[in-house]
Image (cartoon, rainbow, N blue to C red; front, side, top):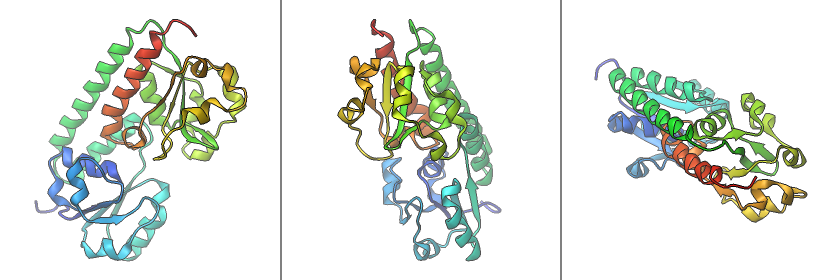
Length: 265
């Protein structure tokens, strides 16, 4: 397609997933080592991690566009630009920003109509989950753990998804902290907020419910007393793309439906 990029290198998973959903996967010439959706994306050349990149591998695939994400890849972006590569860096942190990112990417590759259709589909799916959650007998109090030590609460899009799925985050004010250090929580501060469910996704590390339950004083927390400690794998919830808005929110909804039906607080 003249005038649009034909050789795209993706340094994070969500842009890979979106290009496949748009039917433009043939343009992808390189992916992050963490790319897993769809499974066939793993067959593409691996050219980077998240905070580090193999510049020779990136240059070898001769991209006419590199897609990056967040301030954590700022150094990679700067080095690629010094090497003469065109880079577009996204920084979406909320559900509206994720949807806007999809629209922008669809315009960049010249398939805006497909992007509009994908956003409409994703929005309709979120609306269905929101409507289902409105039928809950109550909205459980939720602690989301993005990391275990230090304890880091959920990033903005995760907290928004929890609300759509039927829960009330116990640290709602922290979602606006873009960087993880701004969302560090003292474990003792969780106790008086008494979450009824704890959902953890430890950035790729397997969650240990026993570790969570053993924190000093946490035996008094409702979620610990009633064994409502759950894991959602980070690939489904901690990447700001379609998977979080679909499978991630569905898993949140299923968990919260179970907890909402529980009669003891």
